[in-house]
Image (cartoon, rainbow, N blue to C red; front, top):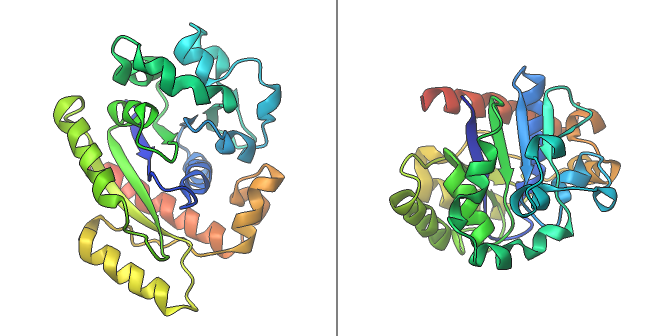
Amino acid sequence: MSRTVAILNQKGGVGKTTTAVNLGAYLAKAGKSVLLVDLDPQGNATSGLGIDKQSLNETLYDALFNHAAAPNILMDTNIEGLQILPSNANLAGAEVQLVSSLQRELQLRTMLEQFNHDIILIDCPPSLGLLTINALSASDFVMIPVQTEYYALEGLGQLLSVVQRVKEAINPKLEILGVLLTMFDSRTSLSDQVMAEVKKHFADKVFSTVIPRNVRLAEAPSFGQPISEHDKWSKGARAYKQLSKEFLTRLEGAN
């Protein structure tokens, strides 16, 4: 049975897509069958895996709204075991269309029932709108990337409130898998301060693995590659490889 994890923070630029792509790649390399769902209209997970999002005939949008067969939209990537449901700017209209849809919170969940990958990762948009509600309704777990910078905790209370409301009203199995610290800069005291603050709030929910600020990690998407292919010896690659192990340990412990 698939385990589905929504990677979510309504703030942009915190490492959601970087985490979705690189965690997905290392989970696939660990022998898991992984489906990455690009639920962000920016389509950065799609382009980050080397897919030309402008040339796609059908995308996740068509599977959700145009009765396209989702398995036909599924694309292989250059990582064996990692597949993606791709997106582009067409998905930007989804919020409006969902407003008038029957069972609008469950569109994504219903569609994903067609797949039986070991792990499904959902790269959520930077908002708490209906697309994100769909992701939470379809997921077993939530993973929250938090950048180690000023205002890191701003808005997290609202995010946690939305998660709790979805759990109570739609999806009682939903749990927080963990909080991931990203863009950590060991040269600054600020990163250490933010780490201490996040650990004070979330305790053992914080992943031990910390994702560093890393040039090779930042440039990998421009080559259409996960960091595992772009520079597997970089600090960023080692961190995501370690994260994949910790992620699997937590998933197995949550059975």
